[in-house]
Image (tube, rainbow, N blue to C red; front, side):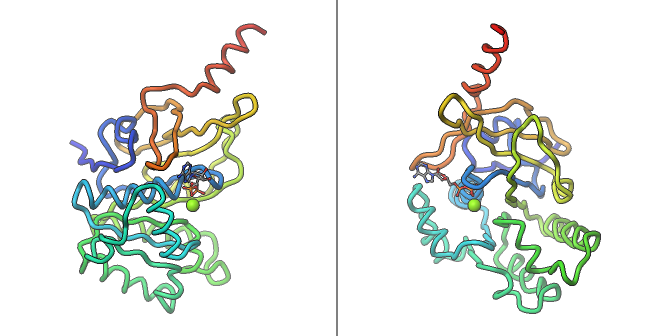
Length: 246
Ligand SMILES: Nc1ncnc2c1ncn2[C@@H]1O[C@H](COP(=O)(O)OP(=O)(O)O)[C@@H](O)[C@H]1O
Ligand SMILES: [Mg+2]
C-alpha cells in the first residue's frame, strides 16, 4: 500500500488518486507565470494548516517578504506560521549556507530540529548556488541533486521543486536532464484558445502510483490555484471539433 500525503493544492489529489506519494520528490515545470510558485506555496501553507506538517521554503529568486506579500494577496497568511516556527522561509541558500556543499549539514539539522515534513525549492536554480557549474560538471551536478533528493527521502520529507522552461507546447515537449531525477513530474502550461490562453496542467509521471494522464484546466484567482479535475480544457475541445470539420 502506497503511503500518500495530501498535496494541499486543490484538485491535484484527485488526479493523483489520493495524493502525493509520501517522501516523493515532485517537480512542477512550466513557463513564467503559469502558477508554479502559487502551487508550491499552497503545498506548504495547507500542509501545516490542514495537515499539521511543518514546511520549509527555499527561494532563490524572491525575498521572504515578497513571498509573504504575494501569498497574502491570494489568501495565505504565512506570518503566523512563521512566527510559531512551523513554516521557515530561507532566501538564497548562498547567504544562509555559506561554503556550499559542506553547509548542507546546517539545512539537514534544521529539518530534523523543526520536524520539517515538506520542502519547497523555488526554483531548482538553488542547486546552482550550492553546486556552482564552474566547480561541478554535469554528471557530478546531477549526482549531487540526486543525493539531495535521497537525503530528503531519508528524513521523511516530501519535496516540491519548481523549474522554468520556455518550451511547454505539450505536443513538442522536451525533457531536461533534471526531470528524470524526480518521482512526480507535472507540467503547467497555457493553451491558446482564439485570442486568449487557457491555463492547463498535466501529470506526466508519478512513480509507483496510479494517476490520470488527462490535461486539466486550472484557475488562478484571489483564492489561489485550483485544478478543475472534473473538466476538460475548452481550448482542446475546440481544436478537436475544428479538426472534425476540416
Ligand atoms: N490574485 C490573483 N488573481 C488572479 N491571478 C493571479 C493573482 N495572483 C497571481 N495571479 C496570476 O498568477 C501568475 C503568477 O503565478 P506564479 O505562481 O508566480 O507563476 P510562476 O511561479 O509559474 O512564474 C500571474 O502571472 C498572474 O497571472
Ligand atoms: Mg515562480
